[in-house]
Length: 250
Image (cartoon, rainbow, N blue to C red):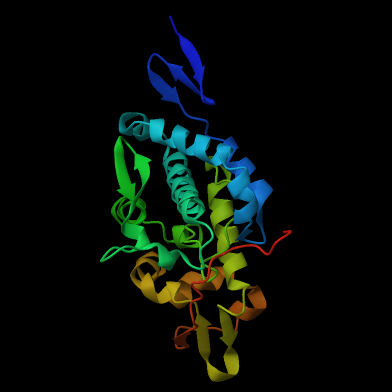
């Protein structure tokens, strides 16, 4: 016999939450308030109930339940949780010029316990560096985890879902490389100018493909990729820490 109750948008079945893997509530937030990678925080602040409900859903997931999911479902869940938690952190302090303004004495904003996972309050750093990176060894996540800065890869205007996760992540790489203020190729100078993300997480890209250049080659347009080899120098562009806030009206 199965007994189910509807509670705050999720279902309890025999005491265990049945999670919505379409991430519908978070998807609705993104579609309504994210445009070209920027977030309409002022408008979202007035309509934040779906975001708060979504984070109630993620908090209700137990570790035992999580471990029964497929790898793509797990990773989609964790990426969405990271991004939703970051957006809520900004909303809780909005207006703010940069996420870096939210740190406390001797603690960065990524070291604040802003999300609830498996019955514990956790930090964004813990989620990224203690769970996502060491468990999944997937360098593509660096183009999906968005730290609320304009220097980050753009926040996608849809939730990540298991059925399309690889395609979504690869599309994120291509979108990020297309932002020439952050990433560009100068064949005459035999130089790649890249976001500092490729310096901070160089080890992850090298483990996956042997070098940063080799990792990126499939994601450049073919005519650009044909001009690049591993002897190109790597130089890094400036990272813009200003808030990924949309202009009024967007």
